[in-house]
Length: 111
Length: 109
Image 1 (cartoon, rainbow over the protein chains, first blue to last red):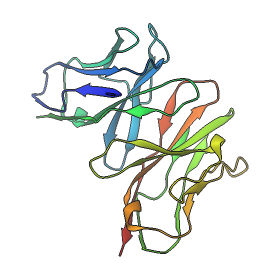
Image 2 (cartoon, chains in turn orange, brown; image 1 turned 45 degrees about the vertical axis):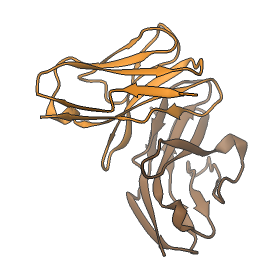
Image 3 (cartoon, chains in turn brown, red; image 1 turned 90 degrees about the horizontal axis):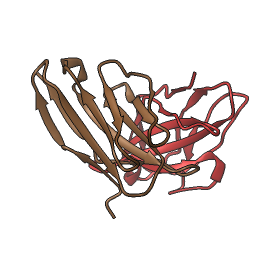
Image 4 (spheres, chains in turn red, blue; image 1 turned 120 degrees about the horizontal axis):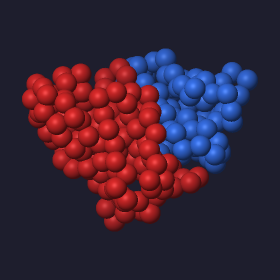
């Protein structure tokens, strides 16, 4: 019973490098989300996908892109990483009228 | 626009004392409100939601539409309640789920 799985768990990038954070869920949920967690800022929504084939901007989308590859997978891409993107990233999924289930997080450091 | 505000970043109380974590929201439609909790080294998980009107681990929360609040309360705090608590809002029928800034609750022995 994996739930929501994020890879990698940790990553260090140099400024300007690109990378993709992967998220997969095995609960057949329609909606998926990407958040970043920063001290004092709480959880801020980057992008979300209400269903396969759709994506929408959240509160802090600048510098990020997403792909809803299929119902299971929702990836977050940083094209040119910046130190301001140092954060802990969480993926979540939910079905209609249910709670959101979270991944274990990806700790990203941009130097 | 959806907005959730948790005015206290840190809250510290003694074991056995009452606890209240504040949550205020801004939303023009009908909101669905949630409290999520993150214990040390664990994933964020749902604590309770307003539509179920239940008590979980002794916590309750009542949606006050007049004051646009959804404060989390517990009459007698326990040490295992120490954690990070997030209030969250989703519009009814919508999928966008936004969170507040979080409150770190510490229960002192």
